[in-house]
Amino acid sequence: MQKEEAITGCLTAEQERLYRLAYSYVKNVEDALDAMQTAACHALERQDSLRDKENPLPWLCRIVVNASLDILRQRSRTEPLEAWQDPGKEDELPDDSLTRRIEALPPEIGTVIRLRYYEELSLKEISTATGANLSTVKTRLYTGLKRLRIMLEGEEALPYRRKERRHEGI
Image (cartoon, rainbow, N blue to C red; front, side, top):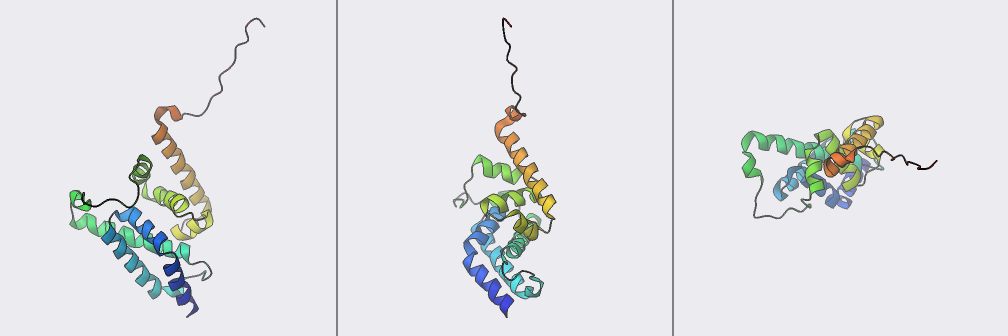
């Protein structure tokens, strides 16, 4: 019963954060709510697999990401791309160039960046949430940030090279 209380307590306390995570994948309110509901059911059904009842957030994040990805897979089989976006609704996440570029990254890299900077999870929590080991998470974060920098700055993002000074008259 203690695990169930830890899960329900975390779901209640972190529902906005988990919803934002789901929405960052599925990009619409109804699907994000479906992902949340599915994730809550899966978490309660699989509470025996929770290892750290003191901090169930990374475990719940993983379940939410998986539920969101399942919805995206189902959607891609049944709906054309145009049906995904409803122009009458405003996005709850900013649709700035950084958000679009994060979405353009490979999914495993984008997930690490979302969890680190949008949801403010530690690298260890991201490792738990994604099932990747810590060094892999660090590599994905570094790679993703490097790619984002290059995308945002274009060709000018080459490594800094100090110009040599010419000393005239010496």
